[in-house]
Amino acid sequence: MPNTVLIIDDEPAILGTVAAVLSDEGYEPLLASSGLEGLALFEEKRPDVVFLDIWLADRDGLEVLHALRELDPNAAVIMISGHGTVSTAVKAIRMGAYDYLEKPLSYNQVLEAVADALEQKKVRRRSHQTPVEGRRNRIEIEKEIVAPPLLPIVKNARKHQKTIKRSTVIYGLGLHSGTRTGMVMQPLPPNSGIHFLTLPAEKVIAAHVGQVEDTEYATTLSRDGESIRTVEHLLSALHARGITNLFIKVHGEIPVLDGSALELCKVIEEAGLESQRVARKELVIDRKYEVVKDGDESLSIEPYDGFCISYLLRYPAPIGEQYYEFELSSFEAYKTEIAPARTFGFMRDLKMMAELGLGSGGRLDNCIMVGEDNVVNTELRFEDEFVRHKILDIIGDLYLLGFAIRGKVTARLTGHRDNIDLLKEIQRLSRVAEPVLS
Image (cartoon, rainbow, N blue to C red; front, side, top):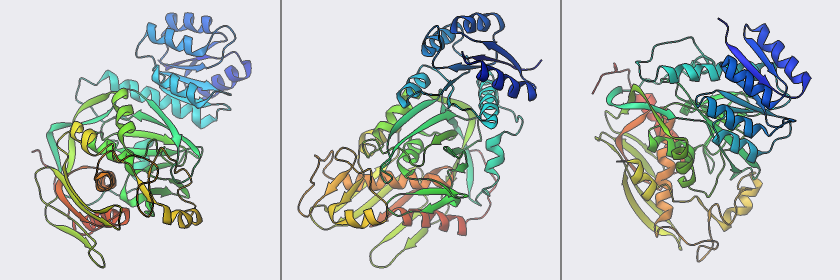
């Protein structure tokens, strides 16, 4: 039996176009030109996927979404709109919509949205079984572009792979672009990994060290001319929460929010966590790996039963020398000690950053600005907030190997470039190790 797709839209042209696309690909379209008609069809036919317009002549699309979710809490509803706002998209996703597409819809957009929604429904249906290999999806094919690293990997039978329970939306300013940006986070099946999708170009970029293009003031991933800026805060929160499979659609740069990872942690918690009953893979550091630069700058990681980071930071006054050691023993510890620490910058660097096209989104409420004698725009959350933020960045950057890490990091006066250089050193010196259960 073909999968059925219900289209609820009061524009005849949209109904006809989407129905034709779906029919060509073997789906069975069901058409409704009003919210009331759509609800009746849904209750009668129980379609596999629903396309629902935000604006309908007889009622608000969000009201229809709520009614659909009342009929079936697992309904895969994709919202569509030609003049919706970011806040409307946020509300729809939080109400349980699987995805949000803007008109005009492209052929590929329609088919990919349906395929992704159906795949996710399959995953949820077998969530209490041992997952089996299904058909190769778009993400799995894209992953093959990045060759897997030769690393000592183990499968930790005591810890499961994780994704989020439901899609969620975050929006705000980009720290370096200065433009409004948003992102949608969606669940992925086990063994998928973490992937970004650039908007509007729709280029998939794996969260992988091989995709790092730039480390000037932030970590930027790139592929085929498309980039995602400032990924480290989000990856830090995902690393700390143990999320291993996630699809992230984003406009150019991850929203900076308040300059820390705290708001990202809250959004992830609101989306919920889903254990996928598959052993989590971990990178176990088997020897000391080290990157040493000129002067006192150095970064190393060595064997350790856990994940621990110690950092020594030294800047001129008013920051001075700060030292902190953090063990990622739990997500609560991360939220309390590390996640609230905000990014920081120096007033003396603003001109140079402007010339580089960076820092345009720096505002009074999303970073710590340091003047000649004091912090000029905020009260510190910790006396040593600066060194804690450096640890936050390391947790994020080191997740670009694609695995949780067992090892102890020792950092001295380092930044994003050193973090990525250390990952490359691990890759360079590692050899293949058969996965084992531990």
